[in-house]
Structures are given as C-alpha cells and as structure tokens.
Image (cartoon, rainbow, N blue to C red):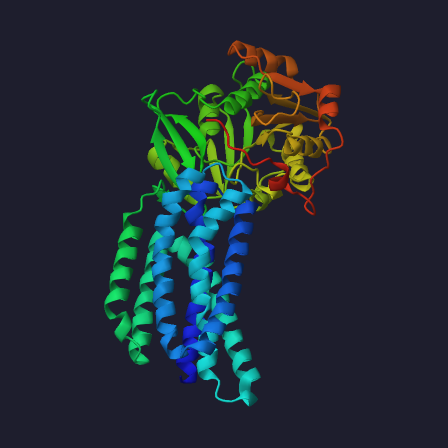
Length: 494
C-alpha cells in the first residue's frame, strides 16, 4: 500500500474513534447525566477498546492477509457506529439514576466494540507497509504518530466545531455512513470486495435504519445539554424544563409567582424575610435555566434587578420562545461559565446572590469551592445574603463539605431541609437543600414565618446544631473539590 493512502486510513480511523468518544457524553447525557463518573467511564472504556483492538488487530494481521482486513474493519466499524444510537437510546431509559456501574455498562455496550474494531485498522496498515525488518521502527513510529494526530484532530473537531454546529446523532450517522463507504471503497481498491458486496450493504442499511428509528427524549440539543419543555398535566399553564436527566426548572406562564419546586420556595422564604413588603432587591443569579426566580422577583418584588450568569446561550433563547421570558431592563444575562462571568459583575453591588447551577445532580465543582464563595462574598453589599441550592443523599457528605466551605467565608450560615433531612444517615434521605449565609445575623425568624405561611414543617439548621452537623467536613478548594465523589449517586424522587 502506498504511503499516503496508508497514512490517510490510519488518520481517519483514529479520528473516528475520538469523534465517537466525545459524542458519547452527549448521547448518554439524557440517561445518566453529565458527571465525572460518566466521563471516567467513557475514557476508560474507549481506551480499553483501543487497547484490545490494537492487540487483536495486530495478531489477526499476522495470520490473515491484511489487505482483506482493512476494508471490512472500516465497514464493521461504521455499522457499529450506527448502532451506538439505538443501543444508547434503547437501553438508556432503563438505566436512569446511574451509578458508576450502570454508566460503565452502558458505555461498554455502546462504544467498546466500534472503538476496538476501528483501532484494528492501524496495525493492519502497519503490516501492509512493512517491507523489511530494517524499517520497522520508522514505519511503526510514523504511523503511530499519524494515528495520534488523527485522534487529536477528531477530538478538537468534535468538541470545538461539530457539537456546536450539529446535533450529536446526525454527526454519528454521518460518521458511520462515511466509514462504511470508505470501507467499501478500500475493499474495491484492494480487490477484496467480493465477499462483502451483498452482506456489507444489507448490514449497513439495517444498522442505519435502526439508528434513524431510535427514539430519544432530546427535543433540543445545545453544546451543553439535551433540553426539552414539557407541559404539566395537572396545571395547564405549567411548563417543566428538562435538562438531560433532570427537571431543572418549572415555570407558570400565567403566574410567575407560582413556585412548584420546594427549593424555589425556600429561596422565596429568604427573599421574603429580607424584604417582607416586597421591596426592591438587586440579585445576582448563578445559573438561569428556566429563569423562574428572575420572573418571580419581577412579580413579587417590583423594581428589583436580576443579573443572570447562564452557561448555555441556547437556554436563554429556549426560555424566551417556550417559557415566556421577556428580557427587559430589569433582567440582564451574561453568557458563559459563571466562574468567569462573575469577574465581569460589579463588586458590592448586590443584595442577594442565588446559586442554582448544576451539571447533572451535582453543583459544578469549580462553583463549590471557597475561592468561588469568596468571589460571591465580594459582590454582596454589607449585610447581603448568599443562598445556594444543592442536592445530596444519605450521609450528605457534600452538604457538610459545602456548609463548611461557606462557613469559612461568611460569619453566619444556615441550611434549610425537609423535616427529616438532618436525621441519622439513611439511604432514603436525600434531595434538595438550600444554604444561606451572610456576615450579618440571618433573618431566621422571617424565614421560619414565610415557611410556616405555606403550611410546611421544614427545618432550618444553624448555630451549634449546624456546626455539629458539619463535624470535621473538609473545606472545598480549587486544589481539592471531589464533589461527585462526595455526593452519593442515588436518583432523586420527583
């Protein structure tokens, strides 16, 4: 085989593996979320596929004429790439509420085989290019470097271009079709096409049909989320925004003061305690999603301003188109990561900072550290309040660590939870908690009164009781913030 086509095939097959690896996170997100465990499973499984494929591809090339292997490997790799979509969409629904084990299983079923088959192309090409032992090092080194270059290009192309420009599933299907066509072309070129003529075409067509027939819950796909809006069957004007596996926001199109989620009601309890008569508040929101709280402030605290740090600009457009958001002078939105966006906000300019940003069920680790809390502290006026939504389960190790982290910055800290939320460790304890903190004494009586007005018996933990609950929990820092590991991965009851 001439040098250039050999290099091109190695480059393309390696790039294809990394395109699938990057897209794996988007395909799986609606079912298992986006967590460190998900990325760990994907990287580990794909690397295992590359290792197994390289090993078996090399052994097979020593036993069979590699001219008869390259084309079929590309065709089979394309067929398996087609099947990743129906495998993930078909099995993903049954594996929701993912643990590390179920996430790894789903990744193995979807992506191990195509990674292994496509990785067998490189050793087969190396075998074809070796003409003498004297040039072994040169050939192996050059083609290995080209393989790595293909992987790099596949990574950058997918992460920086394809995910932004196109939905994930069409990209997978285009890649799969391209591999099948390339494999057929290579087989014809190497004159090894006869046994593939009918079988390969039928298999590819069937795999493509299964891929297009697969159903999935992703109505809209941005660079960050699979998103869709669902009407509340019990409330005609109610709309729920789903991001990947979770209900992230609830908006009532006719009544912005209506708060469906309990943690949103806790936010409102804090706001009511600060301004019982509905006075004006300047609020910085870390996370926008459905823009429930900015709309609530506009309705219940007229004259208030909301500055919203929202990672995904697509969600802003979705909120305007389907959730009734109207951006006026009182709501300002900054796109991009909140850790960067907060630097563009004014110091000592806000009465309240509301933290409600999530990646899956976890607060993004870099928004949970003491360094970020210090930046929030700097944006608050004297006596201002930071209030933060988080999710935890069972032993509530993340809640304890985050309470310790916030306590390292603010003088006064409290946590709101359900009636049994702070009892003994049990696997059935879990859900949302809201931290709130200030350098001035907190309006605990006002929060309790607002909570009682809704006929709830939620618990506000503070003072010595909170210190005892925190115990020896570690303060989270930019150098060490194992949020996903601290948060016990159990599903939330809706």
